[in-house]
Image (tube, rainbow, N blue to C red; front, side, top):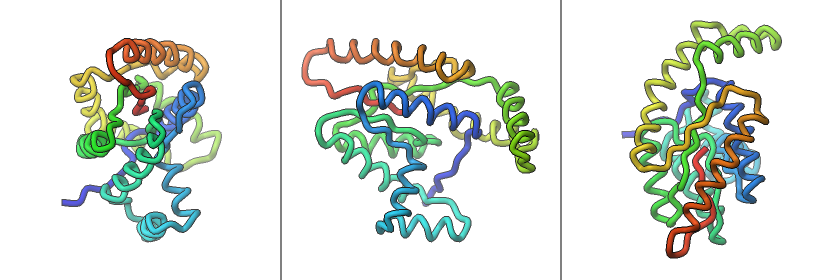
Length: 211
């Protein structure tokens, strides 16, 4: 059965994730693998994967999960070829994708050591998005639409957090303050996780994060 890759979280959350993902990657000196950016690069370069993705987008369709898995597999293999870590941002977004990502990472010995979750408050997210919609004159961001996206996030994406928690890799941080305050909370927490991993016997790769 084919499953499709679809965005289920709200735009404000995605902006916060991209900002923190880029800052984390810069701090630790590892690649920032933002799946949206990776897709756009493949399309711009006209790679075989990019041409296939472009065909789906031209038809207004969703990118199939298998293509997303191929994209993630290549990105992770390239990022970890020298034994370093990575920040994977924007994937997975549902349990099936989470299991696929785990299998891909396991096959190259690069499973995530930390899954970062930025906690949000639905009512505040709605308020911020409605304010932004007014400033940007967006007619598609109405309260019912935003709340439907949030409900879909809670139904489809949020269950992944329980799985990460059972694996002992979930790191949950308040994502509602301004970006600098969130970064100030995230970086020390990740540094502490890295120190614990490095204290374990045997070779340990650089920090691997699914943001």
